[in-house]
Image (cartoon, rainbow, N blue to C red; front, top):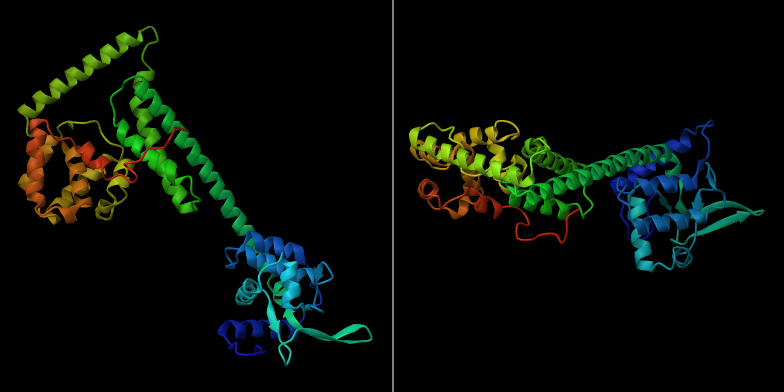
Amino acid sequence: MTPFGRQPVTAGLMKQVSELRAARTLPDPTAEPVNKWDVLRNLTAASDDFGLNRSALVVLQALLSFHKSPELGTDDLVVFPSNRTLATRAHGMPESTLRRNLALLVKAGLIARHDSPNGKRYAVRRNGDIARAFGFDLSPLVLNAERIALAAQEAQQREDTRVALREKAMLLKRDAWKLLDYAKLNQMTGPWDALEAALTATQTRLRRKLNIQELEAICEALSASVDHLTDILTPDIEKPKEMSACDDQNERHIQNSNKNKLESEQREETDQVETTPIVTSVPIAVVKQACPDILPYAQGELRQNADLVETAHHVHAMMGITSDVWHRAMRVMGAEQAALTLACMLQKIETIRNPGGYLRRLTQRAEDGSFHVWPMLKALLPDAGTRAGGMA
């Protein structure tokens, strides 16, 4: 029961001993032998669930090779190779690494030590048959074969989900880059720098192996970017084919100029907070990446810019900004751009000594036409200073 030498008794060892004693006390005569290589394949698939690395699996494969039959039954499940022989069969693994991985397999409950009185591994034979053997007991593999198979199945399902999510993310990324290229090629107005920075950061993250939760978040952000680009580009794509590109661009330019002039006149004639923003709306997915500190203050999930405006309306007082300063910022900048500015300020609040005075100065600059929120937002994006070498 207890290990040879200085190795102490542990709770894991007592649990393993209890399982082995129960299995030997209550044998199942109907149980079929377990194929040892099937167990090894299942453990390879579910290695993370059992805390195994590649070296530990190599050692287990070597141990199984010393069991003559491909089936693990109920008898003769103790193998007794020396460390030198075992290390040779484990592709020349150093003995220090071998001992470490043997301990890992014991800790994972996949093998058990069956030590002799002097700690040596050997077998006592009578009439050519093994009467007693001291070494590594493979019984835990038989006892846990069903649990290992179930873990392997669940691990495969997780991997299938992860692969599908990665494929979805790659396709969404491609769609976003292609739509962004189209918008730039046609010289359309939009938050292209913000989207490019966000897509570049996402492209960098996708080079790593991400888990399911990380991939789901990326797919959500990319879907929002594609939807936003589609909303911007769809009116242009649906214009009559007979119009020339030059006339089309001129018409857009005239329409935008008239719109800006109208918006300027409206800002002078009304004090309503719904004034049109100075710059084009930024996708909410980009805001989440640049200003994550505002997310905990939202009543629910931030799905659109209106949610951001509502959240900022509640947060400004917590930042020490008076209602007069906040409402003036919304009148001058527009509700969405004021909310974006507040989110950026919250993200770097530790560097701002007087948030109220800071917002008042930004509002004055916006009134003069010398402040736009995009450079401030862009500086907060992850990997904002880098660009990938190409577009997918």
